[in-house]
Image (cartoon, rainbow, N blue to C red; front, top):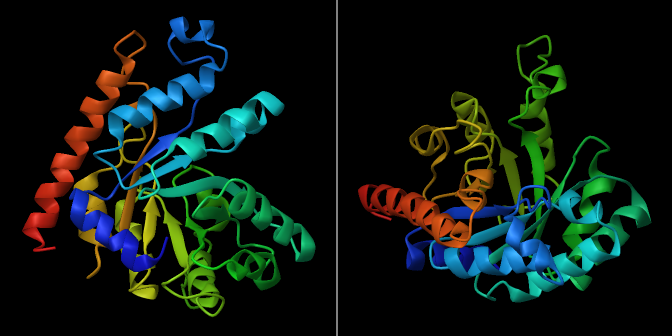
Length: 272
């Protein structure tokens, strides 16, 4: 999916919501365990209930890899089930060099047909650019994450007081463009989003941490908005685990719709 196609979907659906498919067998409703493929049965119902309210889905690959062949098969069926006009993100957080990165890219772009993959930047340019060799595919680079451990390295400052994450964002813009490079920017320290936006004014941000992790949508928009919206705001647990009962999909749809309506008002206020 191209940048312009993504922007058109945001305008059409009046939404910049990404639904995270962090599907955990220990958390899905018990009655689904009777299905031949419980993970896919859960994902299919969630997609059916939320597809009108979101512009992206983001399966976290670890939730599938840990199940071996069954997990990969469920993931592949899930990716094939997602409508073609919805942006797909393989949240894999890969990072290696040379052919290894190229093989990772082939796995997620060619075999899973994902539109984007999350990539760790700390091995440098030759660990990232192989992902950018695929036409109309995206790298989503970890810039400023929402976990507590982000403070261990990402916020370290040089002698001029510039934090490491800003160096990463500035340097990586030489590897790609706003047409194929996004950044992961966590919502739980929303004011820091402004620091990334200052360095990368034109790029899209994938923003986790809204919802169950306590991030504020209004704060994300305040600090992260650009002229093209420039935001994909992810909610995972707050949507997909809204209910443990037979009404899980219905409740997930209600949560997604509520966020979409909030986003619609924001887009209207921004004249977007």
